Image (cartoon, rainbow, N blue to C red; front, side, top):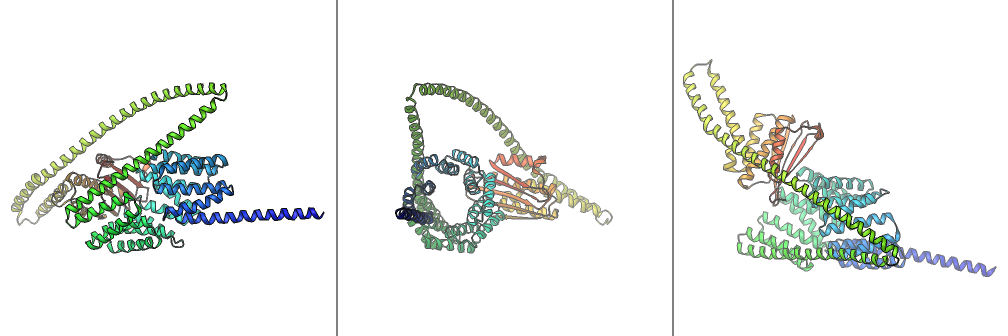
Length: 615
């Protein structure tokens, strides 16, 4: 009896010791994992060091989920540093863990990470495919998985220019994060939304929401992101003091926390603000700091961007020789970075192909185990050849059909372009005829009539009516082809148009624009007619009291928007009139994008984005 009791006590002690060891291992794992996570945006070496410690514990404790988490963190770190081939190898490790565990949530996360890897390499279509597959495979509809998938979908769609779809996923991501009280996750979504809009009100709205997320959840890295975004917006609006305040806040946090890569970018951006203030000495000092950090990080892409900023700096102070020298250095580094990226992409694709080939060879070796398997493989190969043949002919048919569609679309665009060109020429001709032909004739007739009716009080209102007719013809002539557009430029012509509309209607119309210089003549003319069409549509159909026209220009694109407080309309049940058709044709003619946002009773916002180079 005594020996039995001793045995039981020993077993209890051993069991207790095992539990203690397990809990201690889990505690150590959590500590190392959180340390690795804290260095995610700061130092890759530290991430790898603590992740390696955590991985050893996860392997020893045989925890598949913990191993998956660590490999996922290392994979994301590899993507941040451009090591796509090694990242693809990590995908193989994650795939093995998923197959061993047979856990659906891990499979969803694996598909999500696979989509992220492919998108990081530049294979966006493949990346989106795996992300959508991950979303479909989330059978339990786990909200935390949907949030992460939606964020990656929004980011990729934003990068390829699908802004409306990107906005939808980003909004879903923000809403779901808030439902889980994850304000830091919602912050990332709001920052993405702020970058997705072109008008200041929307940008300001989402930046305020992002700032609100950090009130009770301080996060240094996200504070840097927020201040940098605020600084860029303030500078674009000419608020240099506000922009400087945000840049200095972001730079201090980056310096204190060791966000070296972000710090270099901040200095580079801040230098442009100093150039705008004509503070050239300070701008040079800041650029020197940015370049030193980029070279310390051995990041040639970042170094190339900073050298390009040096080129702009020397061009601003009038040293064209130095400007050209730095421009050549910048182009050389950027080309080298592109070459390295292409090599990485080629190696990645080669690795993917070799993996597929290796798996195929293993299957072929296993097929020799029995004659039955060999026969099945033969039959499968024949069916595959037949299928490939069918797909080949089907693709040829689809390609032929697409070519016909492209030809038809090209013809339609040619006709539309010719029509727009003809309309512009006719407007110009009619404007000159009205101004140089009819208007002088009416003026001469008015003088004659004044002489004839001089002293006749009862008939003097005839000359007043004739004055109104002459004034109306002059206004029509200026709208059709304003002389101010030729002499003073686009902004002056739009301001004159707004002044005319204010006098003729009760609409409170205003203009916000950062345009100060002249544009190419044809571009100015097209944008003026777009503004004219937008204004006319509001006057005719909107029943609005206020209209805001915004014209914002940067290095890559021109964004024109019109926002009114009118009656709005149902976009699904509206028939477009000639004005809207003409608007769409002119936007297509300029290789632009047209987005309409309207609901009954909520007013209408129309945004047009025109790329300076064809997309």
